[in-house]
Image 1 (cartoon, rainbow, N blue to C red):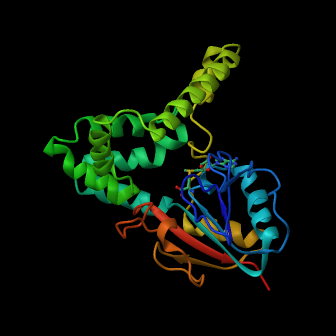
Image 2 (image 1 turned 180 degrees about the vertical axis):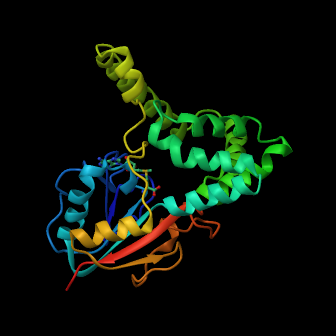
Amino acid sequence: MINLGCGPVFVDGPDWINLDFAAPTPSVRQANLLKRLPLPSAKAQLVYSSHFLEHIPKPEVDGFLRECLRILQPGGILRLVLPDLEEMARSYLAWRDSGEHEKANFLVLEMVDQCVRRESGGELGRLYQRLLREAASSEHHAMIAFIRERMGEDLASRSRLKVISEGRASTILDLTWILRGARHRLQQAWVRLWLAGLPAAFRTQNVSLAGIGERHHWLWDFHQLQQTLSAVGFITVIRCSADSSSIKDFPFHPLDIDADGRPRKGLESMYVEARKPD
Ligand SMILES: C[S@@+](CC[C@H](N)C(=O)[O-])C[C@H]1O[C@@H](n2cnc3c(N)ncnc32)[C@H](O)[C@@H]1O
């Protein structure tokens, strides 16, 4: 079983191969998944990929899906989890129509910010920081709960963690984050140096310093994804949910259900499975 673009969420066990561009632990293999996948043909029972497809530039998507098809056994299943454009568009309209403008504005952020942000975190990051800073204020509780439901981001527990960690001396975790932060800043400085040579108008309109795997390149709805999967050769493209799958013994937790039993990626996500023909 293969987890592509696993980030920090994967099953650590002999049946799983976890791949990502960033591989901070030996349980994850480093790979650029936009190239040929470093895996043999027709061996995988399951290819799972959560919140990765929307990060692939549209012209590269067919190639990526063909690679998924290549590595699957006949009858093997591809399970994709990704933001659901149709759900987001319908929710946006419903909140706007009912006059719940703060929620409608958040939906705009969900759909647009990750596609257009020019720096890491973007507008969404700034909103999270503000809510975390002011988490104690009761006026934000409803918004924090709304974000948890929509995106699975648990800002309430993050703010509790922050309070706990503020009372400690440095730990290995803190050190890892400091080192990662320093490396990220060095990379950014190097990139900025190169970008300084570009015309300012081009830089402002076309260049983003968001991290790898941070910016969305496309938003999919089920119908468009179904057509694309069928066109590359998958069959039986179905919609599932965070807690349903056609895969026997699928490890819903930790992959799609969090420790509290909620969809890890919130209401905004769709769950799509497709089969390689026998
Ligand atoms: C939004 S995160 C999703 C992480 C995890 N699958 C989840 O569901 O929470 C996207 C992941 O894709 C990885 N990624 C983005 N572009 C990549 C590439 N070209 N090759 C390999 N990994 C990539 C990033 O490093 C990041 O871990």
